[in-house]
Image 1: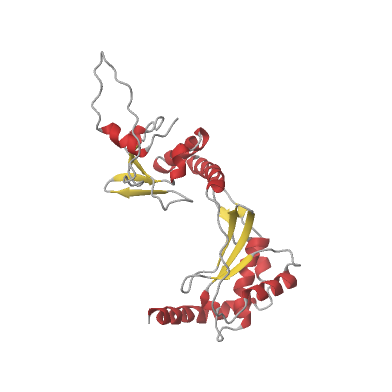
Image 2: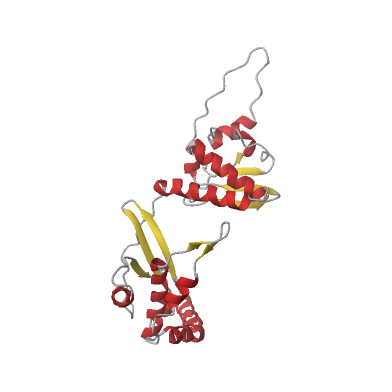
Length: 270
């Protein structure tokens, strides 16, 4: 199965078919520099897309790199893919066909097939679009996350955890854990909401949210039934409660975090 260039497929729609007795060779169409890479690709131009030719149009937005989107536009399914899919190997294309069919035509067992295909596709994509570690943050902050990380790591995890820690680059932002796949290997990235940074935030609160994200490293998600994953599973919850100021952190978070975020957004809007 070979995916043609999006522009070739578009031109092919308007070509006059050759005379039956004098077949002409298929013309080679080069890509003009001014043609946008967002050009749609009709599904019927992709060999082997059996059963989906009237449903899906393909696009390759230049900014889409690490995932794909399936959206409904004016009654037509539009699948937006990273450009790396154009020259994907046969196995990846077959996996994507399986994923697409499972989404558009669910059936018994299709959920598991979709999950398996998606996992293989992301494994193939990872080296083509490696993550990059964030640059060291500049600017003032009340709490030093690196120092707090080292303290918690030593006290609760026996210095076993390794991670890059930062404040959220967005106003407010969320507290998250991500595993980055870079050219130098995998790295854990802990991002802490700016709502926890300030002299009015107690130490047990900022340590609490940081400890929570560290637990995501020490107690990774577990597989559930089908395609489900349990992130905050029983072992994770038990470890989280070992933080000595757990109740104080959660009480402060419930009562004050939304106020802190509102203050940040108002200050940014001035």
